[in-house]
Length: 572
Ligand SMILES: Cc1cc2nc3c(=O)[nH]c(=O)nc-3n(C[C@H](O)[C@H](O)[C@H](O)COP(=O)(O)OP(=O)(O)OC[C@H]3O[C@@H](n4cnc5c(N)ncnc54)[C@H](O)[C@@H]3O)c2cc1C
Image (tube, rainbow, N blue to C red; front, side):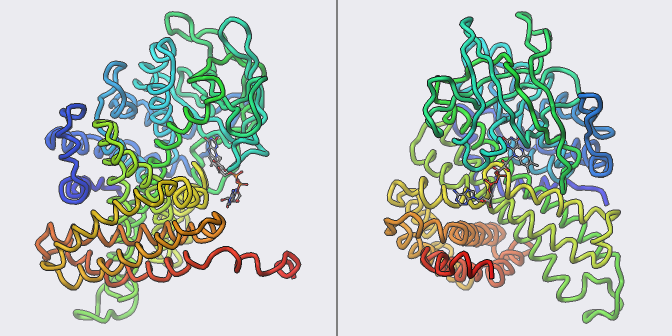
């Protein structure tokens, strides 16, 4: 089943849901006119359809492997990566001064969605490189920028992020990797990192590792961590590849999915590194990369939802099974009510998740273009929601895709199972969705809930206008907003943070459900209450939005009930 890039959906969301025009109206993004963004989306979509999608199964069947210390990637991935690099797709949002296209993050988000739908394992490589580029743009010295950015942006070199160690997963502050100043401005970096995506490959060029490590005088915890650029090959002054650095891939993980992405255990043994950002301020610098990657990982979930939906629909239109309840009763399974329910759920949730992801991207772009504190707060508030809802949607939708296929969904040839296996990691890496939710209800509400209330005020003002035109749907979204406001007030009033944490995941999911209702309502209005967009909105608002009530009810239960059973009782 060939992948079709949903370019019309991006255009609709840009125009009617998230207002990309306001981004294009800024001086920074004046180039991003509708004509330019349309042409870019179409071109990127063609590359994903024609070059990347045919590689997806290869990655699954022929995983990356280590041979004599060298990583060999899946059949065809080298050519696929070259197509991404030569198209300029690694650097579409990168600084033009270093060779990037300087386009909004909204465009990169749509690109990552399409690359993930067509071949998530390979798309993870440029996705990480994009994040590294942004971190270097913001935090690196001019020398590092001049050496690394042009080559990362052109795809000649690739980038990784090295945080995780065996004892330091979610708790990054527990890391033990060390960096010793060598007295010549460089550092000797030592330690073991695990789970490093695209830690090595055979595409040629350099692999540029951004590594978190502690200087000898670094404090315990996250405050004492510094960030280093540690390349596989030490570049010569002219940018050519010099001697090999003291680092190696120890092994690759055997994984549930994204088999084509080499996930490496990395050993750094006094490897030469260059400080990025200030000493002991490594987490702040790494957060630039992590925030970039969080939105991008949300886009991975959305892309997989799209791919899983397209596959399931094609199967449902072809498979006959029993008399169908409509028409002449000789239809395919698409005419069974329960199959319709699944397909509509998949389509409606994909639209909601995509709208949320692109709304977050637009907030980031507006914050970057204007420096406005409210846009920056909006972006920060939406990032955990976009990451979590995008990935949770990918997991739910791809699982439903297996169900639509019946027994064939469990058989690998259909590809339905691969979507489900590949996407599973997205709610785990880049900060688990539980950690995202805790960030939402704690750090992102340190303002007393101001960013949340401001957002709700805007949504309610829009929904109020919509109620006159679309009363039934508008009223339902309005009521949901009010419940969300009450839940937010309850959370903000909790001084014991553990009460917030206990309800963080359902709150995050409930917030996303309501946002999805708002964006579907906007879609229905843009379509004058008619046609497919309005029908899909009605489906979402009447059948999926009601879930917000039970989620938000759970969010207000506090922590004590979670600890009421003793560990003995849990183990009995
Ligand atoms: C395929 C793959 C690729 C990866 N790529 C990279 C990469 O490129 N670079 C990199 O640095 N890392 C990478 N990772 C690591 C990934 O980011 C971590 O797995 C993730 O951050 C979770 O850490 P952990 O596995 O140690 O789980 P743990 O931190 O042990 O978490 C286990 C469970 O406990 C929960 N938990 C932990 N702490 C808390 C808390 N304080 N409050 C509430 N709940 C908590 C978690 O949510 C989770 O449910 C990758 C992982 C995988 C599987």
